[in-house]
Amino acid sequence: MSPPEIAQTLSQQLLSSLVQQGFDPSLFDTLAASIGSDPDARNRLTTGVTPPAADDILDLPPAGSDEYHQLSRLGLEALACGQLAFVVLAGGMATRMGGVVKGLVHALNHQSFLDLRLIENLVWSKRAGRDIPLWLMTSHATDSALREALGSHLEGDRLATFRQNLSLRLNPDGSLFHASDGSPSVYAPGHGDLPDALRRAGLLERFVQRGGKVVWVANIDNLGAGIDPVILGWHLRHGAPVSVEVVDKIGTDRGGIPVRLDDRPVILEEFRLPRDFDPSQVRVFNTNTFLIDARLLATSRFDFTWVQVTKQVDGAKAIQFERLLGEITTALDTRFLRVPRQGTTSRFLPVKDNDELAFRRDEIQTVLKARGVLP
Image 1 (spheres, rainbow, N blue to C red):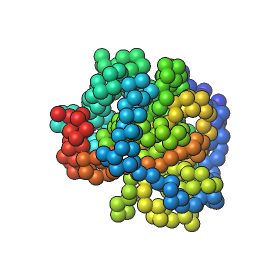
Image 2 (cartoon, rainbow, N blue to C red):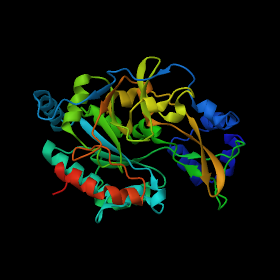
Image 3 (cartoon, rainbow, N blue to C red):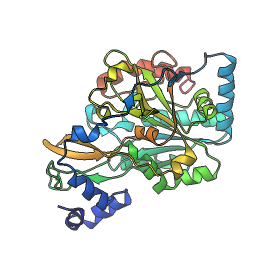
Image 4 (cartoon, rainbow, N blue to C red):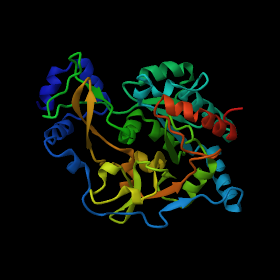
């Protein structure tokens, strides 16, 4: 069934919601028609991928060194001049934690991930002497609950939410997938929506007009990835449009990795690598934390790859097409910064389920206290 035919079967309310959130019927038609191909083959690159160069993975200067203090001053000046906006990726549901909105899960005592992000923003805004914009990219599944939780805290461009895209799941034969209640099954098609979603909201354009220079992006559940003036200074000094935080792998850790694609440093997920490329040879991986040039994020047109993903939904196989934010590295010159994942300076504290949260609670509290985010 082609998108025009699908559109005729949808309620006006659903169709309007889809279009408002970036749904493109023509593109949907093209993607649906391509499902017959092998998803593994279509998702993988075949040539041009090599390990990162020796100097692609960089480290901050030693803490306390003159260079370290210079970077800190540069970052603090940028904060004081209103050059940073912080984006939290908050569209996810905690499917392994009872199916609740991830941002509202209690990370510490009675404080949710969202609460702690708000506290962090308040602390750094006071240090900067001005408000640091905090924007949450929500989804159809999380927007209402997060906006309700934020309540009166929502304030123009200072603290705002914006929705990522919305699309429709498909059956393996390319027809429209329906949920168990018979309704078309909708989903948010990945963090690669960020540039489009920010533009729709108007937040980014206004930020750039006010002199904004950098957008820092992090997952809501990784409380290690907060504002650090040294890292901000490092990003501004090297001058490339994108910085990506990476951490050393431990054991069998897997995730998107820095590689060279046609001799350019990029991030690729493992399922995008050529079959003959061994990802274990790269001993760091992407934390999904990015610092991005705000003007280029606002003005560039990103032709991100739509990867085909198979999900189990209501006990049946469903096809989703998704975009990855890491692919911004294929469009904009990028630098990789290795950051700590252990100790009081850890910047990688992800929480995927209740067991991991119980394991990390003390570590999260220790890190946030060391930064002055918590007393």
